[in-house]
Image (cartoon, rainbow, N blue to C red):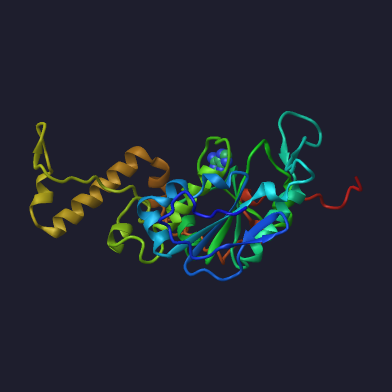
Length: 295
Ligand code: ADE
């Protein structure tokens, strides 16, 4: 099964799905715009909140597209089993490498150039710099995990890049995939009307964004800062910069330290410029044994 947009009938879907045996895979016709292909046990969760507001509007306008690949379609046997008990024992269930690989390969068939991401709390932290890199790709294949985890062999065999949306554990990767997609979509050309509003928002300059005010001028005894009403654009820019710096210093000493070291630019890793394996940071940990153990 693939997502068909039935939950939002007004949505004009640019592409359909094709039935192959019991498995429905995305059609092969190329879609315009950035393309998200989500591999999930719960395709019915999509597009969910992505059908509303900015992302939903952009979806209707064809600026991006969304496919789901249902993991269950690739399950084993009559019960379409996708998981099994962990090798070595322990609680919970682990998603099978063969099932996940088959689903990823089906997704890959129509998204040849898309990097494959596994949403996982163990992954590389999602930052605005990484979101920018993702927005520069033709699209992503996003694997949303469930259960206790995923067989490590498929992470390695399909070169999955693990990405976390924060230091907490969700019951699955679907919400994380939606967060990532939303963050990417708003950076796509034509999605946000005023490009300047993107340039000034939090993290773009390695700082949190300055505070905003609007009418009424006085509200519950609180006035809009006088400088913002002065019409003096230079003073306004200086005030905003100082406010952004103060907020960052007080709330995010980690960001502030990086900003001071001038490392904000260095954190803008390029997707193309992946460090070679032996120099890779911790999220590229290679668990492959040095040689086969012959199990
Ligand atoms: N799946 C479960 N928790 C997650 C997290 N924090 N980030 C990404 N995927 C997840």
